[in-house]
Length: 136
Image 1 (cartoon, rainbow, N blue to C red):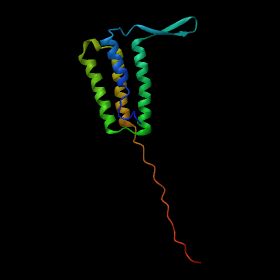
Image 2 (tube, one colour):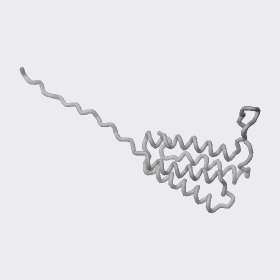
Image 3 (cartoon, one colour):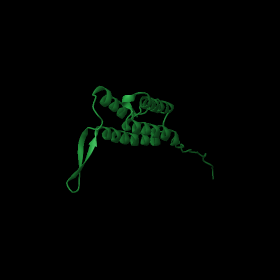
Image 4 (tube, rainbow, N blue to C red):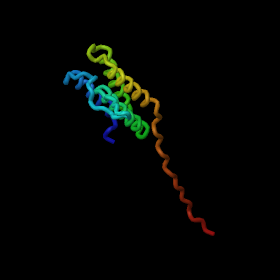
């Protein structure tokens, strides 16, 4: 219940900004390697890891929208986050990376999914009618 009103995609967006602007790390640094058959491995970079985290959090956001329904505050915050990601992508030259573009696309999917998922209907309360006892 505490996750209502908090856009979870803010977490990978903040991670992206920390990595790029505060830590000044390149997004292409390898974080770990996934072992593959034939003694090969697939490197996973910092940017890939941020996108993976964002995709998992998007899944939680869509579950949240489907189960609980999004409120107006959720929609507004999702739109503000989308606008912030898109404006940073377009206006900040250092942030013009494929990782931020993918985060922006995921933010768009979050915003549209919140509008597309119907609000859950309230379950109707059963109506109990009592008859007065009729004499035989």
